[in-house]
Length: 156
Image 1 (cartoon, rainbow, N blue to C red):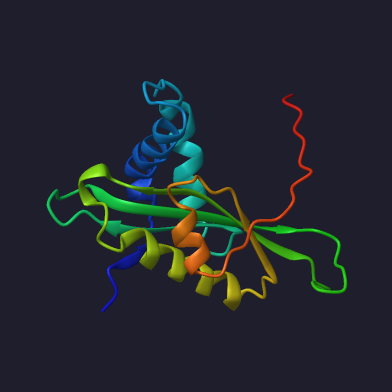
Image 2: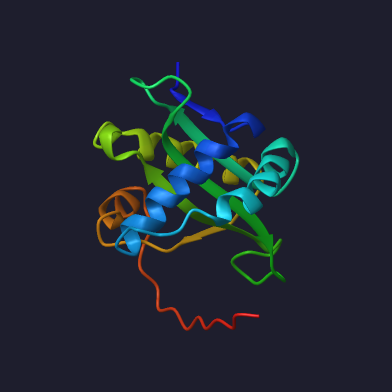
């Protein structure tokens, strides 16, 4: 039996907590959590939509009831097709996080494998993610490769 399960609306607070763990690990910690209150209703709604394009998979913390040990979230986007992806379904992985006291137990890998299966079941041809140096070995072991990225961003 797998430890991984799909996150539910009741997990929203813990999903935000683990997202903050990820954010803090990338940006030297100390980040504000004031935004969590505004985000909580949206996250609950997204987790309640079982047919939507967003999903999160989690592992319950083995030592702390009501806490999560690991989180992986992903979404499916539509882009106009091309030869290697005629239907245009592209997966994006984000918010891969493991509670610091639950690391090195395979939880992130198990969540990632479950998410990749979810993408496959929905006909996703490509899956993108941004990898930290620490996480890159996990992603490489799952078959991800670095790509040249001409991405730009405008904040509105």
